[in-house]
Image 1 (cartoon, rainbow, N blue to C red):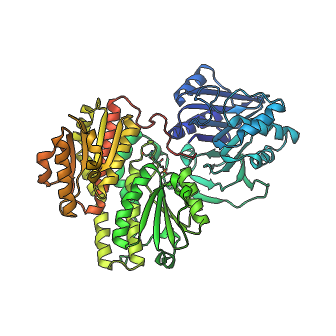
Image 2: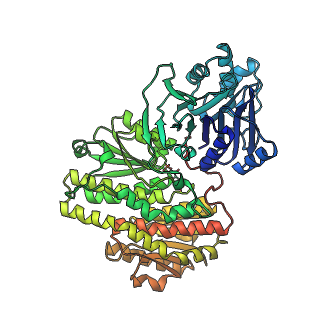
Length: 617
Ligand code: AGP
């Protein structure tokens, strides 16, 4: 939520900052703004709407800047998304600018105090208090030491924030602070960068520095100094980003989402890469949890949000089946409020592609306070959730820019299967040859995904024909139920349509009343070779809805002729083992939602009201 960029160096700061924002627009696109130093003054420009509006404004009124620069792309929390509430926010002397990601929870009290002291507020944002507080602190220090002023301000703020500031008192300096919101430093040669995500500076450098909780960084062209909020220097963790700028380009596709769907075979292969030793054993190197620790686990709790939660629901079926460990799955935002029962024998698995979802992060912290061990499954290297967890499994899907999760979902599934098999291995719940057999099946999944992608053109046509539908229902059983949930979520977020998913067996307990003539119902059918009884039951469910007028869209294994008579549209997917089927059955859902949204003229990379990384609770 909200993208932040900072730059100090010899390049034109405005260009670096605006181009960086273009890479972060997926984080928020309600408004955008920049502040650049030049000729002893601070130049700012900000506009409601997408970055294109800011670019247009900068073209109409060029900003001259040769010093430090900061920029912001916003996902509104406090105050409507208009020009005034857009960041940066400045102090009353227009000598200092601040951008912010997060929520300052005690802003109302601080605003009252600042107004009493004579500060004039122009916006409705919580961020503006930070600008006035910082200015007050800087003046108290004789206009010297912006970093010390930032530390003093942070000690007074409650909530979650990344703050980045620059002041005309020191043209070659950008200062930033973080608490519970992402911020990463990019180290260049004679220039340095700050951003919410490495994507903003990957075109300039692949050397990054992780910032920890409650730290302040002073960024100059030739130095990066990090301290805690009391000013004590801290050691930082540096890392090399293992993908380059081309991975964050659209590569000829009209939308990132289209590219990311196509990248799925590669992404799944990368998740599985290097996980098996020469003697055929699974080895999860990044895991950091010892086999001994995993052998003592008595219960698993999976916490996640949105699409990642759906990955967790699927993981439960595999983990319980392979490992015989009880496994609960919970929406992260509900988890800590119900007083869950956790102890040292509980393994909490936190699934988050961004590694920054605040709901999941708070659940992780709560679990660790209760002495549970936490394993993170994340895509973004160096993000907060893996840093605060006991162990991590990275999905290595590469950057996902489209707001709708696609390749990160499939790779989360692959990672969950690896975790399940690894647990089965260390706890000796399966024979080695049984584990080998599943690993072998997993290894074929990138090819199976490729095959699905080669055959989805009819799904596109179908989606276009349904662009005027008001509602679409999704049904599934077993692992097909979370896939149905994911299909409905994709349609809601991309096509802004009412879509709902049900466990097919639940239908007769109420939802079947929704069925009316022509209502599209998508059904995910399990393999007839796996759980035969499940298959037969869902075939009955298809008949039930069809008998009541539904238009049935059936996703079934190729060769499953038993469903053909009841399918208005039959979408065939390759035959794979029951537990692994979500890796292939999800893809037609992604394509369906994407194409339907495009047919309605929606922006599938930046759907309304959403942001890629949800860093507020
Ligand atoms: C997926 O399409 C959504 N954009 C959303 O539900 C997402 O999966 C959720 O916000 C969780 O994000 P995370 O995986 O980064 O924690």
